Image (cartoon, rainbow, N blue to C red; front, side):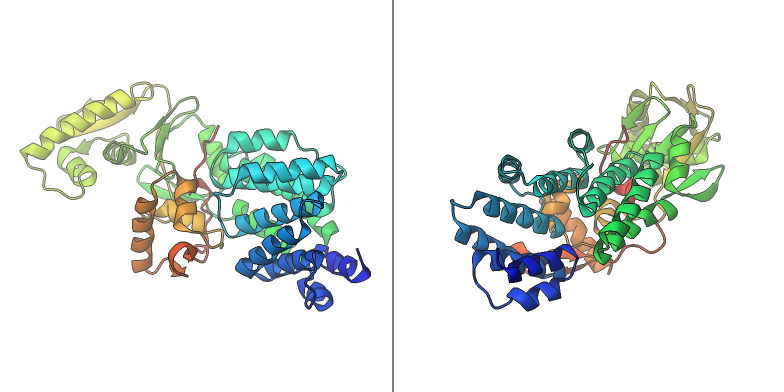
Length: 404
């Protein structure tokens, strides 16, 4: 490479896209196009960046496989930033193989970390854990060590391993200081704030109390029977029953959990489970059917007993019943949980991350937009949705991921 290309590459590595563009903005050779694409990505123009990188990859041709592979990795990073989560994993894997074959260990590791981060975003934490276990950050540049530790922290917070996440963030902060890239330092600081802001409310004995993530972790280890309104499950220390696809059953479980150790009147259960319907004979009959289904679902965790005026929940082995709820209640809280990272998401990426249909996701986004909680820009396939992070609380528990 000539001196201008080398200087531009060093400027980009240091997080100075304007300094890089001063050197290669008017050049159209493949190396300059690739660096211009990376610079535009750092400046936030992701559409222009992707076009420049694709043009550079075409111009490099088959005789320069390493350069083309680097362009593929850079394009995948742009796709991740744009929350385009349906990229071809095969293309990224092929690029990583080429880079490893030619001794470019740093860019090969970057390809791995991009795939890990995508897996974390869509909640496939077991696969992300396996890929992280196969990576050794020793000897990598500080910036890549930051990515490694952020990935560990991301998996740790989703699985409520807060000690692991805190240690990873401490190491990430140290590596970010060595990298001396302001944007990277800001990303680490943003990730660290998740541990110091309220993550949920615990409702017990008729009182609400805000919890940090470490408090939620302690609650899960306490042996209490938890009706988790963040992930729509009922669990104790050893067993979890998902009611995510049974909204009526979860509404009944939550109502009984909030009243524990007292019972709940039948009319109150009808109003809560059936959305304010009048408690006539037909709805009381339906309530008996749904309570029977709830008994079957929770048979290993609790008993649902009939009383003179209604029903009561009694844990089989747990010492108490608590309800864990989001800090702010919203029917589309999971969507807000994804959008809270400050990035722009497409409806298809949100549907993939949350495991739902795209049309269902579009209806949720339209409802949030009507309430002024999200905004859209662009049209058609280029349409993206954004929202500022909800002030004062973390949305980690609303994101899709198994805890174990």
